[in-house]
Length: 62
Image (cartoon, rainbow, N blue to C red; front, side, top):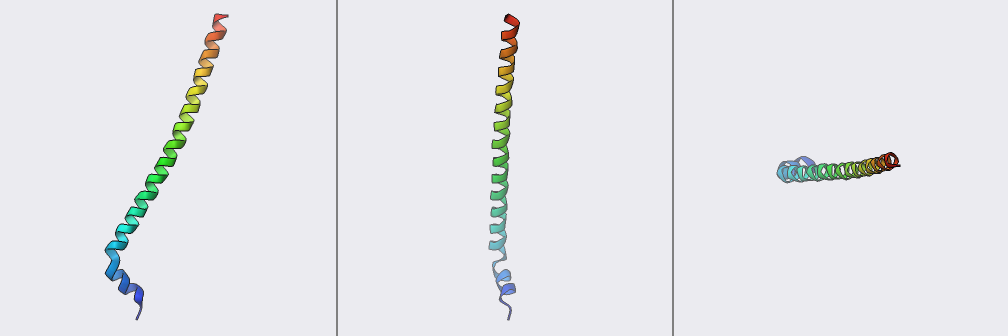
């Protein structure tokens, strides 16, 4: 007698819910990492733009 089909038939719902939760956790972590990376890139670009604008303003005043 093979045990795997018996266990799958008995615990299919619990297994499905566990897999769904794991997939949602992975997707959330993946999105969070991308959001943090995007925010860092945005802040760096914004800071560089501010410095460039300040330099241009300073040069036009001289």
